[in-house]
Structure formats: C-alpha cells, structure tokens
Image (tube, rainbow, N blue to C red; front, top):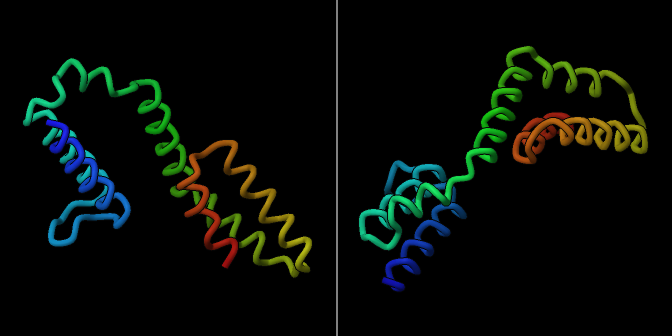
Length: 124
C-alpha cells in the first residue's frame, strides 16, 4: 500500500510541476483528481477520509476569489490599470512604486496566482 501512495505522489507531483502529464490530456487539476481517484480505487483512502480531506471553507474562498477575478476581467479592470500605468511617463522609482502599490492592492483582494497573471502586463 505504501508503494502505491509513493507512486501516486510522485506522478501527481511531476504532473503538477510540468503542468500536465506528457502524453495525456490532463492539466494540473486533472492530475490531482486522477491521483485522488487512484487512491480511492485502490482502497488506500476511504470515502470518509476523502470527504474529511476537503476543506469546504477554503474551497469556497478560492471559488469566490476566482469569481471576483473573473468580474474584474469582464469589467476591464486589469486593462484599465495597465493603460493607466502605461500612460504615465514614470521614472524608474515611480514605476516601481506604481507596480508595488498595484500588486499590493490586488494581493489584498485576490489569490497570488491571479495577482501574478494580472501584474504581468503591467510589468511588461
């Protein structure tokens, strides 16, 4: 049983690191779900343990932040900020201050992955 757990862990870890498993049409979410299914199917993890492993408040928070990010995207918030920072002819210190302030404001409302994606156009 322990070897199955280590094997599933290694495959899922590699899949997460690569973004997908080569040769399969699975992204990170699919890789994680497949790992959970294998552990459940082999009997290493029972259904009661599986349900205990899911933290509903955390999943709800992440879902809510994703919805908020999608609304920012639909409202054009990210484009507006990129244009606002790009319009000004800022020197290096003021540009750095604008990037720090913008990323801090996004970090107060969104998860880090979204902040990184939103800030990439601003930095470029």
